[in-house]
Image (tube, rainbow, N blue to C red):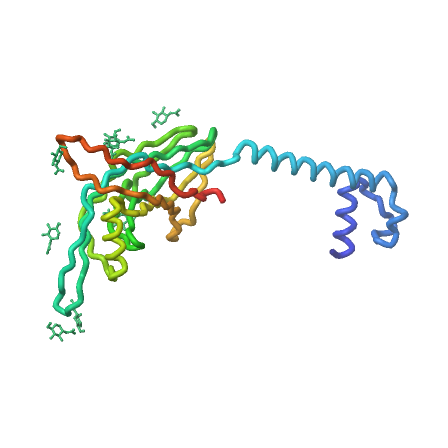
Length: 248
Ligand SMILES: *[C@@H]1O[C@H](CO)[C@@H](O)[C@H](O)[C@H]1NC(C)=O
Ligand SMILES: *[C@@H]1O[C@H](CO)[C@@H](O)[C@H](O)[C@H]1NC(C)=O
Ligand SMILES: *[C@@H]1O[C@H](CO)[C@@H](O)[C@H](O)[C@H]1NC(C)=O
Ligand SMILES: *[C@@H]1O[C@H](CO)[C@@H](O)[C@H](O)[C@H]1NC(C)=O
Ligand SMILES: *[C@@H]1O[C@H](CO)[C@@H](O)[C@H](O)[C@H]1NC(C)=O
Ligand SMILES: *[C@@H]1O[C@H](CO)[C@@H](O)[C@H](O)[C@H]1NC(C)=O
Ligand SMILES: *[C@@H]1O[C@H](CO)[C@@H](O)[C@H](O)[C@H]1NC(C)=O
Ligand SMILES: *[C@@H]1O[C@H](CO)[C@@H](O)[C@H](O)[C@H]1NC(C)=O
């Protein structure tokens, strides 16, 4: 700060247009009018206190909670693979799968609405991705009002997928799970979030980048052979997914 700036700041702060007739200097601090210093201190204190209140009120109003994802029901009606020998004597594994999921999303916030863009559900087995489905296209989105629950009914992942590097350990793990009667399949929900507060909207992603929100749901899925006559209940237990981590 040069001398002129310091003088004008002090003048403005203390409301004395001509407080320092002989010019400003820190060395003459003890000669400043006491009133001037008190006013200065009061201004600073008030600013800090009001700023603190402002922050607290903002937090109380906005105070976002994470939406909660739950896989409420699921049925796995096909899950097997066959190895085919390719020309190079290496085996390639083709997984056949048919997985249907019911997912609920609960927005616990009283004042925040959520927009989910590029909503995709995918599944992995032993860290190998085998299926995905887009629930929104690039234009659309899922809107979720405050204190509302969105039901995603019958999200179906079905088809076949060539698995690379599905080795002997994976196969023996698969066999063990087949014997035990349930497969450890992880379902990922990924999307981009926009948050709405009143008329304000805020992106919770950086546009143009690939940072999707990803939530893991670690499921134990028994293979349920659809049996019309017995009406087999799948025996699946509703599973809460990992913390969404959108606001943290
Ligand atoms: C999902 O819920 C609907 C309606 O409650 C039900 O008809 C359907 O069987 C469920 N799907 C799965 C995979 O459980
Ligand atoms: C692979 O498995 C599917 C389903 O079990 C079966 O329909 C198909 O014929 C098999 N393919 C080969 C090449 O074994
Ligand atoms: C078979 O192996 C050759 C040479 O090792 C390679 O160039 C070719 O891409 C392989 N083909 C397949 C289908 O993997
Ligand atoms: C592929 O298999 C044939 C017959 O089984 C064998 O002669 C050949 O050496 C194998 N090639 C490789 C690269 O393993
Ligand atoms: C799903 O969305 C992703 C990116 O949002 C896109 O790359 C992919 O092609 C889409 N797949 C389908 C089947 O629409
Ligand atoms: C929840 O959302 C649905 C569909 O958007 C809407 O019909 C319903 O009124 C909402 N409920 C609340 C409590 O906002
Ligand atoms: C379906 O259930 C009936 C009665 O429990 C049983 O007799 C039949 O073998 C089952 N079919 C399959 C394919 O599991
Ligand atoms: C899950 O879905 C199956 C059939 O899709 C149904 O029989 C079962 O009752 C459902 N379980 C729950 C908890 O909704």
